[in-house]
Image (cartoon, rainbow, N blue to C red; front, side, top):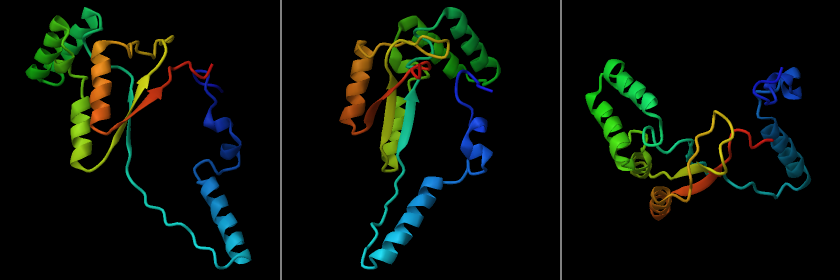
Length: 171
């Protein structure tokens, strides 16, 4: 069974043979290393230093500015009734009325970078390219002045900028 035109893991050889959740490539590397050590006992293996590297897919840039009023009002209703957060409701409303990305609740880029930097980490932000041709894609332009300024800020702070394809890019 194919879900959303994706290949399901359950149809894979790894699943059928029971090794889907095993790091099989790592196991092959260990076998290869054991063989190489037997042939060349003087070999030394490189020590690996692992590190945390945070990645963030930027599916949408704003929660209100480019959204229909009905969606914004639903969000405000959720802020008031479910989340009981008047401040969040006000920020959402103010962002929609003014078109100011700085107050949009979804604009968390500086927050993410601040937290990353506080812990000595770098973040990678993967921005969408191309037009979103499915209901799962958010359309935004990398050419907009606000996005250009955001990309510049991310770069200046030493974080990574990458590309994130659209939902139907596999086609």
